[in-house]
Image (cartoon, rainbow, N blue to C red):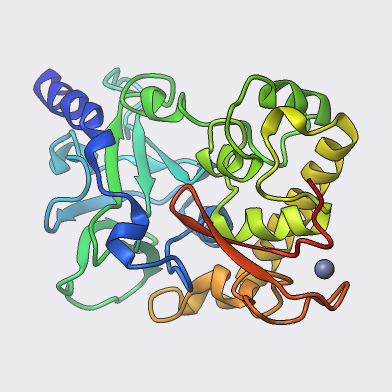
Length: 314
Ligand SMILES: [Zn+2]
């Protein structure tokens, strides 16, 4: 739909590297409210059943988000929502044409991203849009609203999940952390040749997605791996421990998220709840629960890393 919009999108995507780093905007990452994979997964789980089969009645755009929508809102009307899916921190809402004979983008849908401060809510009577509400999708199951004060979030039309712009954005992502295809052996192979620390490599997101700052710090602690260890020095058995620790850490955060979803807008969401039981993250100068030594904080890749030098060996 709309070649012109597609071109605008392409240009916008190519400008991505010039965006400021999260920490320089936030003034530190302690208590970061940025939605991470667990928040997005909890959002998906809470909305998927309710949105499935919903008919679009209209859409409203607020101030510009990270990228343009890429389609006229009128073209969304009458479409029906398929099953909401998650890939990395993106959500994909299939929107199928009402008439089976309609050949225009039958596989089309909206790719959504919560950016640095976004949250999605589905409500029957949410009231008029507030100053931070920048996308409304009015459906037969309620109004789906994106609230995003910092507007790094995105709602973008794609003719199919495997077409651009969706395909282009998703192609940058590493493996899903819970994907059985991501084995310790694969993780080990992917880390070979990396010149960075293990912490920076995991944060980059192109090997495995979802390893946000707090979760990497915790996973490395659980696995007993020093965050400054260079990738190629990580043995296969340690890769196995690391992958297990990362999965355990993310699973716990998703579990906690079920009870904190309602507070996303005014609290720190899943990460905030998760931090209450963090073993090292945010605990600089406090005693390590395992050995009694002091938890230290260093900065890596412009993000804070918390670790115990006794428990996490090089
Ligand atoms: Zn320790």
